[in-house]
Length: 356
Image 1 (cartoon, rainbow, N blue to C red):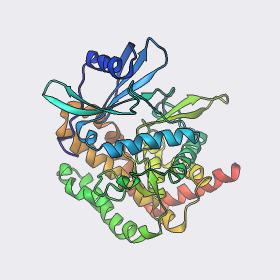
Image 2 (image 1 turned 135 degrees about the vertical axis):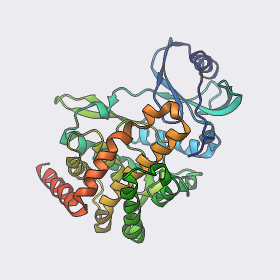
Image 3 (image 1 turned 90 degrees about the vertical axis):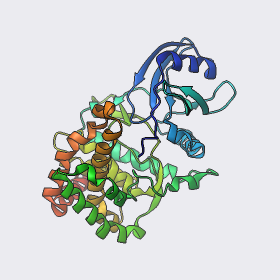
Image 4 (image 1 turned 45 degrees about the vertical axis):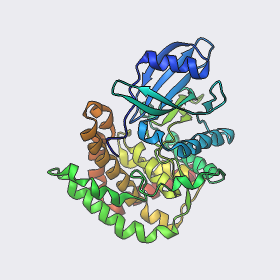
């Protein structure tokens, strides 16, 4: 989370030239896609098909080994039947390439990949029926279970000790909390961080370890209509936050982001939990910590979005999407309290599973 994390800003003609030169494809159409701190273009070449040109920010581009593991993980998940993008090799056979580009303020090095395009719309645009929420929980659990089987020589790089978005590092938020000065939300966030310290950290040794996607959010999950007038999951995007964590972290992240898109957010937890437990039942300690972990993810999202706006005011609208909705949901969850929320989630999950 630093100003050095320079977001690339290529012109369309620069991006088009790059696709021709690196991948031997001639773009017929190109359109920009939204992104947090990278730059993405949807590319439709004359040769057919659709792709996403992904240009990583300059800071992440320095970590070649991490990008290599992420790209490999996508391929591994794809081979195991999950709807994930894969990288197209360059004309010289590389899955990613480091390019020196001048976006208007001097040359910087950016890692570039061309990924397959996945059809569908983001789950944020679909009606979140209990069935779709169940599928979302189930897919997140399947993904982490498959990732746990993955072997790679650089796997240890996913430890990412001070990675600010890891749910293992919630206490790092204390270094950013001053962005909430004067906001009544600051006291709520401080209280949640304290609950995290007293109830999550001492129990972590009982969580089951795994590799997390780490950002299974409402803009990173794609859906398409199915034959039953509902929706099915057609894509999982953006492996930039992958890290070594715990199964319960992925579940908490999934619940939190699905709550953002639901007219009655409290109802989300049950079906997502039922879907998750159809693949990976929780142990008692994991159940006990779920509420605080969901709230902790809200805190990460709100505090870091507010901080990012101070660095990139021009990108405020995109950065604050989650934040605006999230404040109200976090306050509601906090007011209801752990006992009330857990009762709703776990009873609803049990009823949902009984109907299956």
